[in-house]
Length: 111
Image 1 (tube, rainbow, N blue to C red):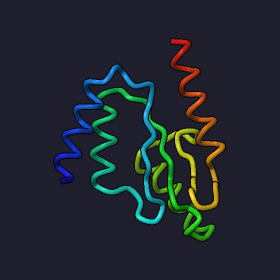
Image 2: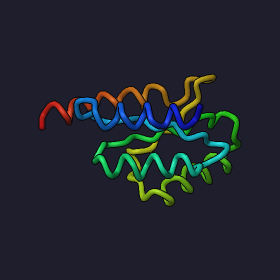
Image 3: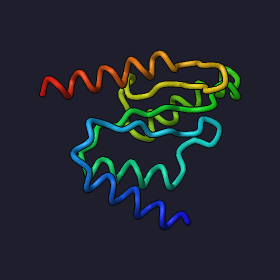
Image 4: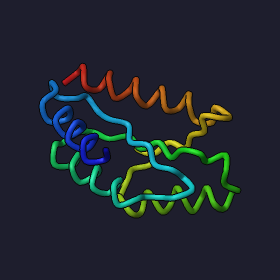
């Protein structure tokens, strides 16, 4: 099933009209997985702007959140505005995520 989804995602990302950007969800409790790393490399190869949503941060204490954020930024060399801490349960970061997506669209429209 995973291979089928992989082929479907690959075809969609390669064959769709160039995407303005993509939001990649990374579980804050688990950190960057091998699948996440492969997706990041794939997206870099396509030149697709990527915003990272660190999910489930409500399940981490303050120091755990800090480690998760710093770990992801360091691992991928992210700018501060490329990473948003989020929680679907508490709503943390959802406004910021929406603003980031809106800014990405606005920037793409000026190109």
